[in-house]
Length: 252
Ligand SMILES: [Fe+2]
Image (cartoon, rainbow, N blue to C red; front, top):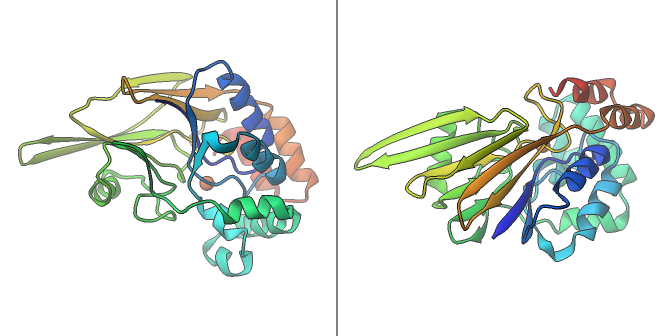
């Protein structure tokens, strides 16, 4: 199976459009969406409508922002002030149909096929960040899949676990570049983040997404330039905090 993998769209229509255009000619059997359709960005309805238009070919898990906008009073306690403000704003502008879409997103992790799974934060907790090898080690233990795709940190990266008899080695690497191709070793296990479509945080402002071909175990990360200025202006026009607009310029 060939999968298009998208994560952390965060209401950024310009970035999502650019990714869909870039991926349009790539053959795919299904789309894997790792959560956070909304939050931060100023086009939550348009982004959800694009996802809905892709129909049953999208296999999704819920992100923490997708959950919080359904009840921002309760849910945004642990958000910073800007994220909280965006969550309240999003809750206000969501159409009833798009709200239902968020309500129906399943909680991860989700097994997609034998040996391939998806989740938002970590397999055990959609709110947990996987930044370090220590965190990845616990994540490998909580889910037996050979390859798990995760989001939430907005940083394209890969953790690779090698087991040799009783010994284990675990290496984490950042994935940098316009197109990064990795052939996964069938004897090893992987946790891979395809980066964020709508709010990259690795100092590369380009939208990030990936393609995975499970038949040959080939993962390809793509970075796509998009109209950052339009996304930025949309956030400012909505009256959302300027920091949410400006960080798109820096990819931070
Ligand atoms: Fe996110």
